[in-house]
Image: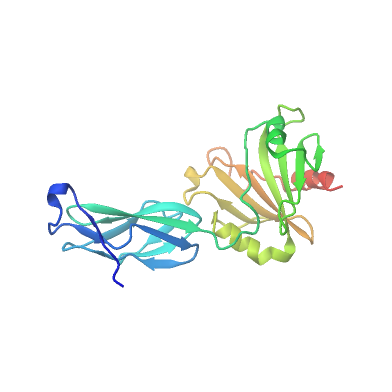
Length: 241
């Protein structure tokens, strides 16, 4: 069965004129890693660009490649007008729920929202049964009072799911490799100067990975300097006792 086309143009007066762009689908839904051809026609030469290649890219012929989880638009232009196709990228992997990071919120606020923690220390709290593959989520604070604020979130993932975990992170973040005790580091933007979140993966022990989420500002520190691995291991070991 033939698919209906969507007509777009500069104005209602131009509808049906030769500079129209006809698009078959105004929205594309893909799983990270998938591709789809945009079907668009015009009497004029068309060009394709992505508003944000962090989420999806497009080549000169209109083939969209889903990169990371989220949404963006593909702009289709000719010499006279333009059209948009919305692209929604969903994850292939759901190793654990995307954490509620709550950076800057107080200890008291976090507990009010999430309930009584399974375990706690003076500067961190933890919740068990986060997911089957990632049994623990931990919130670290910048002090040891009820008004201390969240400055990091750690998710503890079973090493049994190492390969899946790497894919889970790659379909959500721009991964840039590791250094020292850090196996992988990711950002929430292709351009480090625009990134606001850094995510690092480090081995806690033979049974567990630490996935560490922290605020990021390229003007303040390099991508690797924000993670104090030894300090985080001490915090986690105290919570797991």
